[in-house]
Image (cartoon, rainbow, N blue to C red; front, side):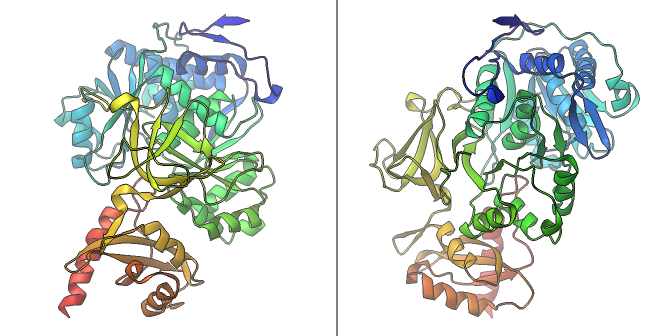
Length: 530
């Protein structure tokens, strides 16, 4: 049984397996979206505070904005989307794709200088922003000669007008090879790199996410906190809810009490979760104990390392485990802990179908290491992008060297050790910041810790720690240094521990090691001068 989608893509019904998890296969994300509109029109699609729209209204809004973009002439070009998490952001994404454009996801909170290098690389034909949330976008558009800036949220592009619009559904030919997205890597240690995807690999990422944590068709309620400008938020906060034809609760900005309120109010079953800091924040909320979380059944984790203490505390208090995964902008989901109870804390799960994962020597990247060895993780598969925008050549044989250090066990579970670039060499010994952070986290006074390296004349590098206490005065820096000395070999001891109110994070909610290292160098120099 097959059917023709409005965008020209065909999909075939998958007849095998659990009926709750049956899906159709789609050649492109546009076909997937219009299929959801046609089959779940009356169902709620997006919930954003007190605003909510159905799939039918979603479709009308997308069609109206897409027609505006088509008149501009964006087909085959890029459209920059600079809108914070909101109904408008999701409409902008699907409208760009429906207009045959490449949705270029940019963080709307970026400064003018941060946007400059991304826009220079992307060369978008148009830009989509939201009224009242333009930030640096209009100025950046003017500097880079982007004449068409479309503002959602006002006039005939206000949400009420869009959901009532009678625009024709776009009929542009979109195939599996039509370019779909352009996303940029985090760029915390250098210039961000552009990752381009055709619809074929975008759909593969969506399917891969559902292979990691199978969801029930027409029977889930999602909640997303990650920014849709990030690959995790793009999938969990836009694409995958459409794939399961389910409502999505949108959180504009992470606030623990707000998240818990919306989980209870909407009976959320799939919580996008993400980095450890999200779960740590929820665990610290006084509201957690009184919130009804009984509908929750899937709580994925990824994007940062999780302490064992956090994993155990969440499962004990919520009754559902955090299922860690490993992924990237270049590949989407790579490995994941399964929902069948065979998850292993301290690992990021097994490789997902179609993805090859190998451990290679850090110094000799072509040298494959045996099971149980620590080395750099390299990956290959149909959704892995091994060449960045502007590159002439990709990696040899399609392998992507992730820059992550890890180890595979005998059962195929992957454990992340650290980032290759974060690894310190102290007196010739390898020191992984995460190992020191794990030790610090065992101290009862510590809520969160981060370790970075700074230069040292005698040792080459030395670790320095930043620690956030559970309560003021719960421990001193000397207490924590002594604790490390009791649990770590000498060359792994932090030179200093700085007590801070919060651990600095990047916009993707990862520890900002680059900035912390700069701060540590300055603070250490001040200390030495005294």
